[in-house]
Length: 159
Ligand code: FES
Image (cartoon, rainbow, N blue to C red):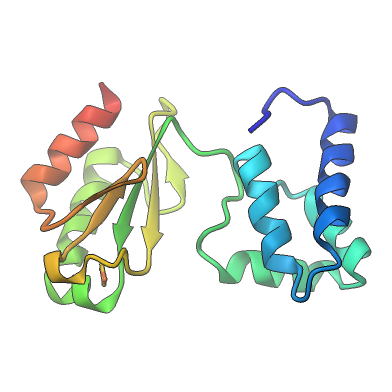
C-alpha cells in the first residue's frame, strides 16, 4: 500500500491497475480489490476512471462498491476489527457484541475512532459458525466472543 503518492501518481497507478485487469471476464471486482490492496481503500476519484475504462456509468461503479461490504470509502485505522453479522452469529448474540463494540469505540460500523486506532467493520461469516459469535482483529479470528473478550481485543488494539 502506498499512501504517499502524489495526485498524478495516484491516477497513473489506478489506471495501470485498471488496464492490467480490464480484460478479465467480470473485471470490476478484481479491479476494486486490487485498488483497495494498493491504497487501503477505494478512493472516490478512482470510480470515474473505472467507469470510463469499462464503459460503465459512475452510478454502476458506485452501486457495486456500495453493494459489497469489503470496500472501504476511506483509509482504515491502525487496526481493523470485523464483527460477524451473519445468521449463525446473530443467533448466538452478535447483536449485543456489536452494540457493545459501538459503545466502547464510540463509532458505528464503517467508521474509525478519532485516534485512528480502530476501524469497525461488519463481515458476513468468518467460517467460524460453530464458535459463534465470531470476530476478526487484524486478520486473526476469535470465536465465542463475549463482552469480556471484546473489551480485551479493543484495549489491545488501542494500547
Ligand atoms: S455466521 Fe458468523 S462465522 Fe459464520
